[in-house]
Length: 144
Image (cartoon, rainbow, N blue to C red):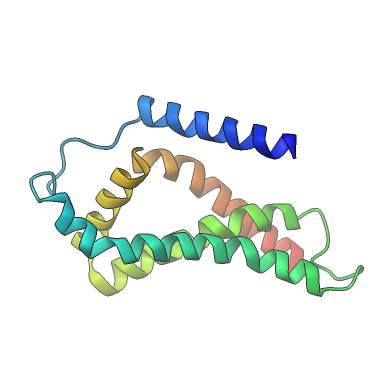
């Protein structure tokens, strides 16, 4: 229990320090649009992104819980899958927004997400893309 509290505190402090070092972009084409209008258009996408992230985290755990002790997915690569698939599902959602709504809509969503997270989105990409690649590689190695 103490380790959960400490990891939550450390994670919160890390997120707060990242938002100070890498604040959201100030110069943006949507900076003149009232934020309430952007919130109305993007809050359901932001919630969907959180749901996609959670789904990517829960799917490997469900496979782990339902499998037998000697199932092929119960190995050391499962750790990469558990941490990589949430980022992969997030990037799949970003790709779907881009494919179905276009690049301007994706830029608007990223602008909103930056404001909600209070951190530049490229910080998330810098950490998220390698973790997503690790998740895909782990999934391939787990299933092969």
